[in-house]
Image 1: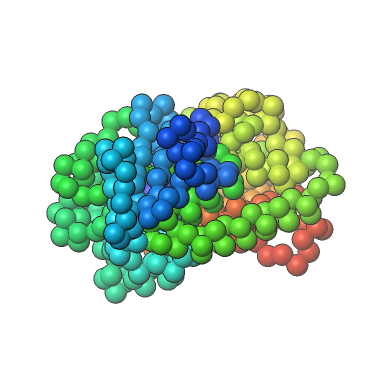
Image 2 (image 1 turned 90 degrees about the vertical axis):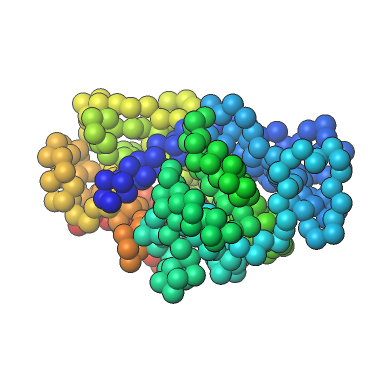
Amino acid sequence: MKIYSYRILFVFVFFTLTACKKTEKSDSKTNSISKNEIEYATSLAIYKQNGYSIVKVVNPWPNAEKDFTYILKEKNATVPDSLQKYNTIQVPLQSIVVTSTTIIPYLEMLGVENKLVGFPHTDFISSVKTRKLIDNGTVKNVGQNEKLNMEMLIDSSPELIVTFVIDNNNPTLDNLTKSGLKVLIQADWMEQSPLGKAEWIKLYGALFGKEKEAKTQYDAIVKNYKDALAVVATKKPTATVLYGSMYQDQWYVAKANSWVAQFLKDAKANYLWSNVPGTGSIGLSFEQVLEKAKTAKYWIASGPYKTVTELNAINPHYSQFDAFKTKQVYTFEGKLGATGGTIYYETAASRPDLVLKDYIKIFHPELLPNYTFTFAQKLN
């Protein structure tokens, strides 16, 4: 179980640093009748029509060979013949299965968590509210994302399954569609912009007839994020920062336009690999990282560590970094749910404003004297 958990966490970290292409905001078929409701997200577009919405999911995984279009149809609505070839989903939904913990906060923010009927590996869910639904049997454990329990899914008869895939080989997706289950592929994990990830709440607003509520929630997050940017607007990025840890024999370093690097830039930190172009990551040896980051003032470590002693036990060479010696080491992954799920991985995507404030608190604590960390923890 622990090995599987770490593998899932690595997939999350690695692919949130993976490149993604820009979503077209409109096309010849939709531009004439509506505008795209999405502003920041690059893999999602929503065109609201009279009685239905057109949802486009592009670049759903790295080097994807296809995009997806879905029609969200309201009761008694008429969908044009030209759109009949796309998968149609009746909305608002009354039941759903999702396979990523990042979706759980969206459901709760919209007050529709009681519509969730299944999730793979429910131990990964940290939210107290949704854990109660798991404990009372409302939300069933439906296997693993790459090996869903088809019998349980068919028995649960969800109106929609929202899942993700990581490459062009998708046997799970094929099995779901062959079983007659409605499936929607989501790609929030491919977004590199902090506000782009959070904007996927609008998809769930459209699925549950909560568009206004989703917009209200999202607009508040955007305002909070911009307010945080204003706090550090006059600061210079002087604090040098090392990010990550060794994974097997590689240290994956985020490129300049990745999700992680964008937070560090917005928090006015001097991220040591900010000159590496792109939205992906590069794997470096320990020696390469040490040479560049030995004197870094701060180290944001990946992993659920509590103390520098624990970190040193994993790799004694970590003690060579100055940030280790001065105990300026932080992690965002130390807070866990009741069954071991990482709170940061579940909630950070939907609350980038809080992630940014955590970073500002680390690098410029004098600017937020009364703010308490949401995710970050300093290693003792």
